[in-house]
Image (cartoon, rainbow, N blue to C red; front, side, top):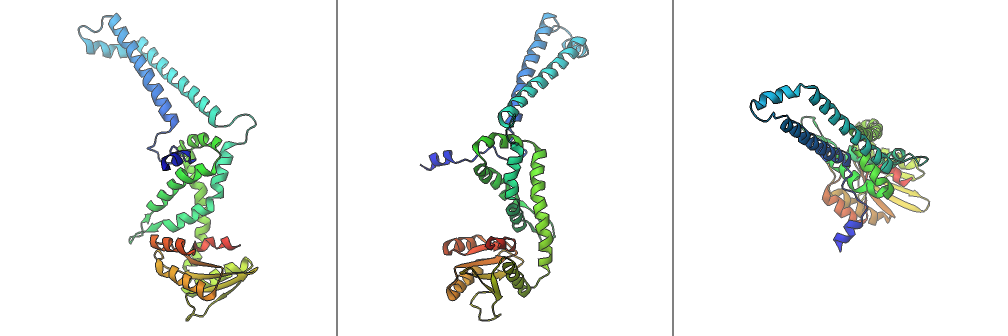
Length: 306
């Protein structure tokens, strides 16, 4: 049952930004190149046999043959045929997947989907990119998340008719860099904002989160430093209520913050509760939040409440 469901999911394994994963274009050209080389090799062998050059001084004659006009012409003809076949295959693929006539620009549509997710991807990059004790960036988790987005999420957001074009488009490293640049633009914008937040102390961080809610129309206030029952910010808007547990840390947020948010929501009887942080969350924190309905947010995601 699960196998059949998996087959019906609009997920293409060919969607990839990994250079080592050969694209359909390269595979096609490789097979054509092998076939032409095999034909050319047989042709040369037949010429050698017909001219009786396979007898004595074979290697000397091979070297001599390599500099004959016949061999040079044969080499150029072979290369020309490879180029012609490659051009034909590329032309076919572009007609099949690249759009034609008055059809919408498929690249613009493809990039539009990614651009709509650009801010979310930039937030993911900010949360998952870390530095070790020597200050060397570690982007392993971010690269894994980016590959998951391209392999699993992107195909579901694209119409099936654009899947072939997506595979073809991602086979070009130039286009992959274009995708990365798009995300980097959003990332740099968030980074400039986040640099200012790094200078805030925990109380100022709570005030920042409260002000963000106020700009979106919420009546927001900071709770008392002690006896707040796990609440840092209380907010109301249009009959809805919200409590925030704000955590400005230097490491991923664990279960304790989620438990405090659960307690705060019960105590203040709010409609929603969230843990807001400048960091990422541990697996156990995410699992507990999923079970209890607590939102886990990076502070750049506060616009969710707009």
